[in-house]
Image (cartoon, rainbow, N blue to C red; front, side, top):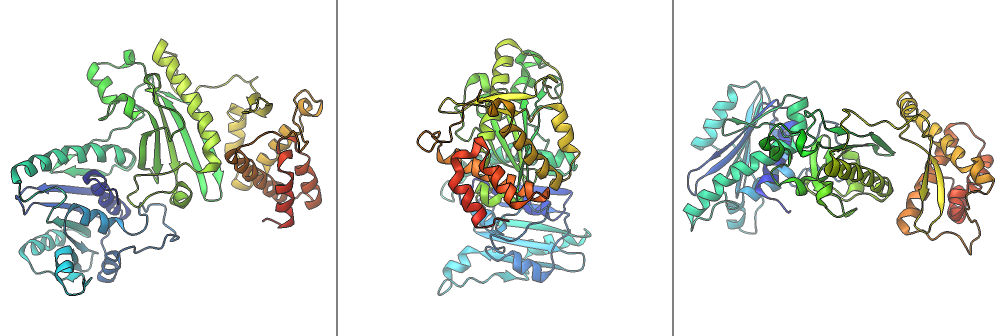
Length: 476
């Protein structure tokens, strides 16, 4: 599954957050080969039938709709993360009415004839009775107990294993303070490890007045909004001390911490990467970009089972390249010359209505500046359907502007000379055409006029055959 002890513990914390916990306590208890890890919370708990369902492998279908607060993926995390850490996983839970428990013991499974995959329930051992007693003092909650820690303990080398065990406590703490920093900051979630409070680490160093928050951009897809917010961190001279500067670099250092930070339901999935858009450079150290996606985006972002890997979908790649280029350019300016330090987003001048773009084959095109403050203000005042209609109207302006109609900008419609487009750009443009058609329809435009207008748009002339196929299939 690609787990590490840090990501496995984070997966277990996900379950506690999804259960609406406000306090999560993690305990590493060293008892040589009998050492244990527990994750306990004050969440809503489970009744017996829910617990049995939760102990099933892949308790959810891939297409199962998740709630807004659910951090789960396939219904695998509890079992796969737990049994990665140790060969025995026990869940004791109190739903407010009853306390029940269930256990996966891999040794029992392997020793049974025919690999009998049965869970154990109602354990009467001393340790389970102890945890039952602890839960009885709460209105509700859950304790996850992990034993036989074969991922951390080599029974043939206990001394070395002990050193590794204690080192992992520190690295787990560092991981959790980053992955769940927004829950700790925004929801006042309390996480403790061996009774020590986990202090959040915000990678965007928002508390420093010299941090620049650039313009937010929103991508509207059928699966919900994707919000992109770039930051440029302060120059070294803007930190009060060397320790503060080093802390802002993160546990992995400045160069490994630059890049994109991808959040799913505010839970950090992937960070410190440019997704192969650019290579890391020292002058980009101050560039960090926050991207927020929803569980509905899981499939298109190819979120893995352990929620630690993702792939940027095709339809957003070009926009992301532009945002990355802008953010790293500003990072370079600050890195080399200390830049300017206006707190909050930098605003373009009111006269910056149009922006010019150059394609890979050298052709120029003009587009309305989507970062103009008045454009952003108008977008925020519209509901989702109005935004679609407005977006389609903007495309009409761009495609039928005087600069195109007078021939000052050349866009060949001849099949022999049409521009060379790679598959990514073509797919992105075709998706945009579908959005345009839907926007025109919601605006009450005549179907025949929609087809004629779209076919006459210079920017999409090379897609004539594909556009005709869309209308023939009567897309919705």
